[in-house]
Image 1 (spheres, helix red, strand yellow):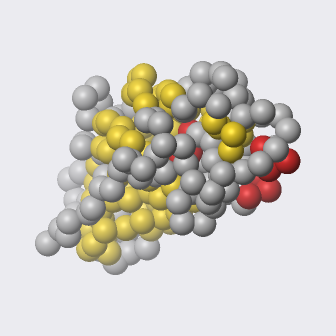
Image 2: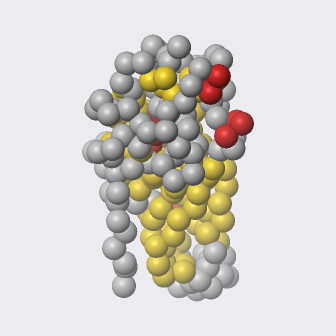
Length: 215
């Protein structure tokens, strides 16, 4: 039976706030806590076989430490009688984060979550990347998801603090979030499926210095 997956609206907000170009704010002073003013995030566009219009959304955590993307129809499946094309789905979300005046932010961690029913022999993976408009597109990360599985799954991308890219102060640059699920039946003779339920990006736990004041 599928277990409940908690969707805490926490991760992506921090991601977007961490991208400022120029002299590192660490040379100017770093905040231990996020700004208290409200952070607003807009879902500008969505496209892809894993997120038809109306099947994805974004939410900001109340404490401004993150934001979450939520999917309601992001599913791959493989097995007897199932077309091979059903084993690949992708989604590109274009979001705009409005950081409080005088602050910038950086992506330091992203959690990808979902649920899977994978029988022995099935082969599954989750791929992802994210980048800001006008900046170099990052390389896709690829995370194998091992079978057998009948449970929630989660994989994490972490950005080393030395590699964090800061959003330019005073500019509005959309954040592109690309994800992809792949599944093949492999040696399995049964039906398999994998979902993407939410994508969390957070700096709350390990990178408290990611929020920085603009010069």
